[in-house]
Length: 210
Length: 225
Image (tube, rainbow over all chains, first blue to last red; front, side, top):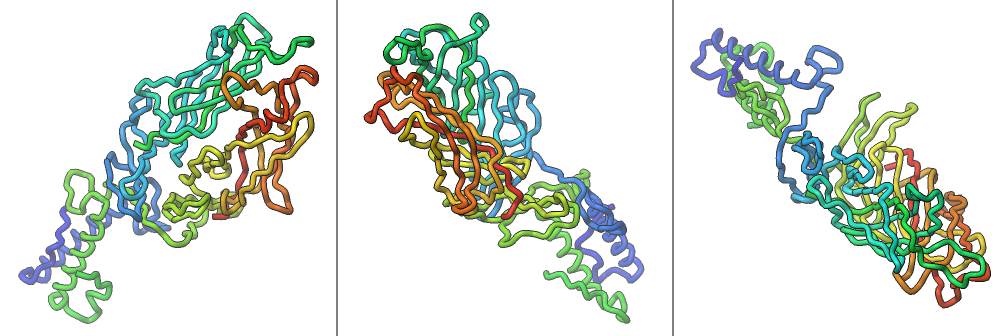
């Protein structure tokens, strides 16, 4: 039923004008019922579904925008919920994630959490180790890194990794730590670990905001 | 043309009120078409959102009983006053007001609301000046000002970091022992014990202090925004 915002007009006869008025009310009623309780039900107009259009919105200084888009990072190419901050600011895609031993999750705030479980670490005479985050297309990059937590776990061949890790430095792409063998009585000072082990890492930073 | 909800008036013939009625229909279309598929859309998109905008509100909405409400409001927490999504939901007959999107983006002391609405994650680093004894790390961050309003700490993790990568082994182990909000100062405290790995072999001396550590906390909030 067509809505006519030019009706009724002065040239309409009273009865024909009534037809247009009734048609406009009927169209308004249909419109109201899109995702809302009908006008004649309680509570009238109450929203029961929110539809997030696929969009690429601009935002003013006093405005936030929620919308859907095909996930930029999600492996399943699904539609994800996004929020754009004011003044065409950062876009937080906050319903996508990556599961697995190396995974990530971005919070609605824009904080990005990444983890790596059971990363094999080969022996290194220096004790210094570096882990580089996966930079595949379905792994969002940190735009800033805040805190990283690193600890050792036994590898498949050793039930006791005999190693204590001390995270040293972090960048948006990698984590560095030093590994030291646990103390051996009678040996002066800590010994640099040279055996293989596995490492677990969890990192907190800022997401890419795009 | 402004909407006039007094037309058509009683006892006035329809032909005498045609113009204001047409103007009302025009005003309705103008208003409804904002951020929605147009009333005149014949492709089936009439009434569907084309945008879902949250304009800044000065105060909280009081939500309809039993409903979940989302709106935009500025929050001044953690040193920045930013427009954020506020969520108000009903829990145990109480309206819980937290933020879906607010965070403090900082390495030394940062936090974020988690999207459950009840949790805040906090992280940061600290210096350790003592070893081989129990000690308390105090987060000098005011709850409700530097941090969201939180009720208690429900999980804490802390670990030692290396000061330099190759020449300064930490040679110590940290044991997180307890965590709480000091009822007098209203500051978060993390109790830890730091041990030299060996009392007689340790390379820790006064010159190697303070040691570096970092922490991760999960806190509980019952709203309060």
